[in-house]
Length: 230
Image (cartoon, rainbow, N blue to C red):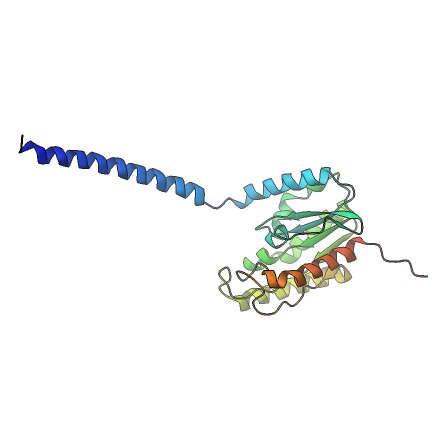
């Protein structure tokens, strides 16, 4: 019996280890599932559904198309008496909106559409930015003739930006394309200075007020009728 005891203890410990290892693997799998980023297209589908629901409850809204900078923004509920709809989709590019189309806006009869996209295009060094913009503008103008754009803010070194110089070169080129393509319907982004982001891209609280004021002014310029000249 004494000789068998060590073997019995070993067997018990082995079974316990196996059970613990199995539970550890199960928990690691669960954690992996929980920490896996949501695929962009899943998020985009959800956002489009939410925007469509909001549009169904409004009349002649101002729609702001954008990426995570816009999705995270707190837009006024109304500008010039018109409801404002935040149609920002984190991770979106011009091509994403162009390819997926603007069908989710159908029937909403927007007063204006403001395009505030381009950071993700710059991050990916898009080679089709100008053609994507032209085609997206064609789609938007079939919904409303009143289409404007708000420029891409500068990036800076941060956890999401390895080379801010190269990224800002791309952003500058894209803003120049906006200006060339849209003329007076394009509003330049403000110069926010150093430390204006939380991660190299997304606007920090201290700079948000200035950035948002410029965005709201661009929306107002696009959507509000100019006073009659006497």
